[in-house]
Amino acid sequence: MKRLIFVLILWSFNSLLFSQYNPYEIQQEIANTITASELKDHLTIIASNDFEGRETGTKGQRKAANYLAEQFKMMGLPGVVEEGSYFQAIAFTRERWDDINLNINKKRFKHQWEYYAYPNTNSDKKVEAKKVLFLGYGIDDEKYSDYKGVNVKDKVLLIYDGEPMNRDGISHLTGSEEASTWTSNWRRKAKTAYEKGAKAILIIDNSFKKNLQDFNKYLLSGGMRFGAGEFPEKNYANNLFISTEIAKKIMGKNYNKVIKARDEIKVSGKPINVKLKSKIELNQKKAVRQILGSNVLGFIEGIDEKLKNEVVVVTAHYDHLGKKGESIFNGADDNGSGTSSVLEVAEALVEAKAKGHGPRRSVLCMLVSGEEKGLLGSKYYAEFPIFPLENTVANVNVDMVGRVDEKHAGNPNYIYVIGSNRLSTDLHKINEAANKNFTNLELDYKYNDPKDPNRYYYRSDHYNFAEKGIPAIFYFSGTHVDYHKPSDTVEKINFDKMEKIAKLVFHTTWELANRDERIKVDVIGKN
Image 1 (cartoon, rainbow, N blue to C red):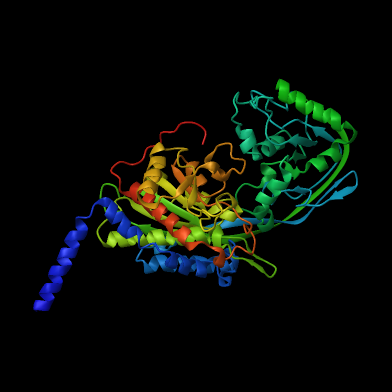
Image 2 (tube, rainbow, N blue to C red):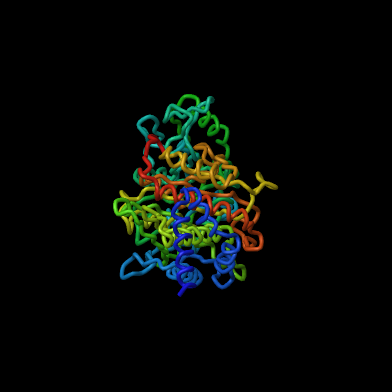
């Protein structure tokens, strides 16, 4: 009996001592449950050959989803989808090229070498034309229109990507150095060409080699859209991105005339078109099938009755590129690292709740599929949310945090922070304070620059939340030589670095979930 009384007194003393901790001490103690060894345990399983590269719609992706759901279940988290499921099922339409070829003046060019095209913005079609019309930038806007007074019905159009900028780098559409949506959303050009009746558009890509490399995952894996979607033949003129070498072949003897026209457009802001005699033969045929993917949801309900209906969403995509022949794209960094980090953050929040310390708001830890197919899993959730978007406070997104890029070689204690100030100055300040108080990483904002040519802000799952007006922050440690290659494997991961970043993710999420006032959307303008 004396021994029992002693134990109870000791337990009461420890509980009292813990309850008297200041908030920083509580955070630090909970954050310390996030460890490099546990991150490694998760990642070793997620990026194993057993999961066959986790390509959306495959057996490997389903095995990965089951593993993640089992982890949430072991944490004691409830299933919050229909009938207590952890899975938000998504029907995807998957499209690959069955056959695609392009002949210009009887010379055949090679797809994914000299030109490329996305299956999901093209329809099955044969195009033959003896003439091509150079139509500037293919823009139809109040301030500048290449289509004004021009009949393009049944024509093949040759256009430049981007938009006309004068010698000072000022756009003729926006009147500033900031480009318009005609640059950021090239599909707008394909849709306009379709509406005007054009047969096809050939887009001259001035960064052809770089873009081909950057977007190779979409071309290798095939495009997807969720549900039946809108069929491209009802929306877009068939479209190809071509190298400057192909463009020269099309221009032929009129090459100098076209270049002069382009330069005059840049100077004057007035459209000019040029008729070209060039024989085009284009054949595009797709293989289309329906497949099923799923987002995996782990929900930690808030403990504050007034705030628990507000939700902070923490995301990472768990899908990757799958198998190509005998090669398995294990995707340890992309994005097994982010997936493992979110699991550890979820477990830390569960630990905090078990000790009576929050979170006050609810936190949804969501691992999404379809990212490699065009951010489709997060887009699906943003369109069909489990919890109302108006109650969604912020999105904290983790994508590739396990390696060190060339810029930071020899200094792994850094993280690229993207999007934190695009919609909310509160979110930016919260992350800065969390890092100063706890993790002391170098916060690198290089890729947060609106002029970043890589456009990473638009290339991970946070963007689908930001597009809905929800403040979002994206943690990213940069690319490396193994990016989107079978060599992206577990033994190359820096787990000590991952631990620090996962702790920063936790601390930022903690503050978002526990502060008295919801963060405000106070940045107005294009995001």
